[in-house]
Length: 321
Image 1: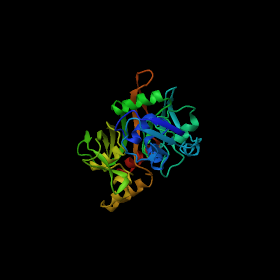
Image 2: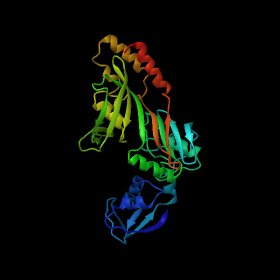
Image 3: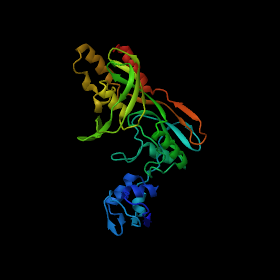
Image 4: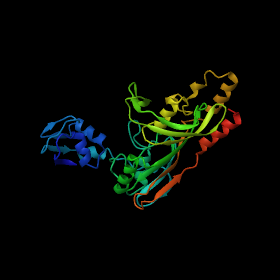
């Protein structure tokens, strides 16, 4: 995209919003970077991303081939576990430790890189570094994720996520016994000011709702099914920790080895033994149901618990903790 010119037909819309609405090749965050870098001008002048446009403003866009090439993901022959695939969607059973798409500190080795190698066609609504990506899972969360092969499928799926029509169930193991064995955690979530990679419950945050049900208990741990109604970043992990029951292995939200402090030596040794096989937070996206974008029929998919979680369950039972 070089020397392209757009004529504004709306009054008062933000510059970055207008470009995102009219350019499908790039995500809004990418376009914001181009605006800040001076690749976009309004009537010959560089403007900030939040500049309010006037009708008939002329937006000049100069994103050279070299710049645009750098934002495309490199196809990489990375094995992925495909549960289902047709002409519109792919259902992936994502392994833990895999980032969904490139970002700061993760330039390759992501699910997006694997998809770019596996597929000849993926939706590009979310820009070239997120091909096919409709929603995300945290790096260390394993389980089911939906990928869109066409823009039509992507829009239909995104609409379902927006309207909270997609039904999801996660499996997790938490510290402690829950006071209420089932219920709704309805607490807004915001990014933590002192650590932009973390989130906290904050009245000024975005609405976040998670239903949960304790399905089994041991002496010191609970086995829980989560049914998130919204899809905020780290939502289940933050809500679980807020309730006093952080997910085991989740060092970011208080579920790591440091929680062993305070237990008597006999129990501490057992818990230390358990944590020798815990390499991540124990959360798995186990089930998902949604309306197929083409057939308009409800379909459901389920993923078995991965080996590491099964081993941890067995270890908890054998240690009687």
